[in-house]
Length: 462
Image (tube, rainbow, N blue to C red; front, side, top):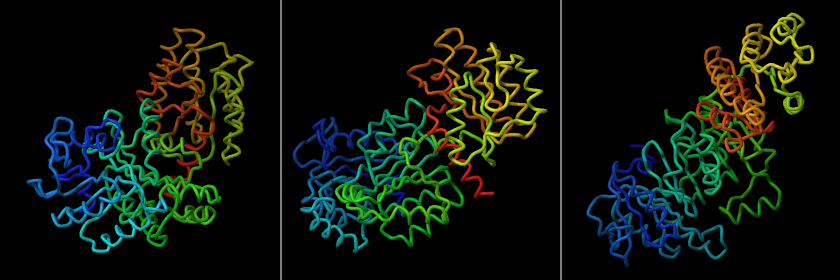
């Protein structure tokens, strides 16, 4: 077994610091971990209460009758050392330390040095301290504060130096079917680092995309060596904090990280083919785009809208990002005019269906087929689907049908088709319906990030 396998598929594990207090980490993690009992044995350790969550507890690790692979520690910082020493005596392989109050706080630096001395013995591998644990949906193990009900498997692995960013993104992404299948909060990285997890999941066949939230990197040379290997075979998306004094101060108090130069990191990112983004809320839409859309191999974008305004907005955002919204050839425009005869409807690119007076599915589907067959664009955006039902309720059925056909056409032609509207699943029944089958993008910035990330990865991979 790889040493990290003991975290993600332990045969026997324990929560040290299990609690009946519903407002405590010991309670949240215990609840989540108990659901793992169908795959492995789970024990709860609490020296005071005989039961936690209705389950018998044990006063300490030594009292547990089975050999433990993994423990999660949620006890006050001064008690962590004694728990680890007991774990080593009992041949526990790995430990997650949720407990905070170490190098990120001045008074905890001595405690962290004591932990570092244990790490040097290399008899146990440690995640944390000061972290939000991890989860692996396919393996049904959740050692985080995030409730199991919010977890849904996906090929995206998120490795982060901030636990709560991953948690908040999971809550936000769930209704849009944008989820993390695996999640690791590295905390202060007293032993295992973000690089260790990248290397592990880089070899994991169920991980198609790796996402990193980085404040600082400890061993730059090893990070570079590992990422050079991993980013050549699967997309690695990176959100790296900046290097202002305010950001550096926040990082030191968060995970004791020293924030490196963002300019240097950008240079390294380009060399290693990392996909760097600057908006954390774009992490999930971009990461899922790699397995919901075909490869994007060029910079020419066609736009079809139900109104000219968003055609202008999308054109502006895309061209500023270095993409092209080319005017279609005269021959293509003549053929488009036969499909969209209304003289008020623009057919140059963007195509404005809204001015055509027609809401027939072929008014959209036929131009999409034509543009790809003429090889005048590399991808197409269809904007404003889901907005018709606001005016004509029965349009929901028509729009849903169009979206379904577009999603089928995308797979058949193996060319990217992006659906765009600022409405969400909470605003439009059509959007909610579309999201059950595939993605919808809700801002020009979000969609441009997705297009840019796809193009960057496939351009450097070919």
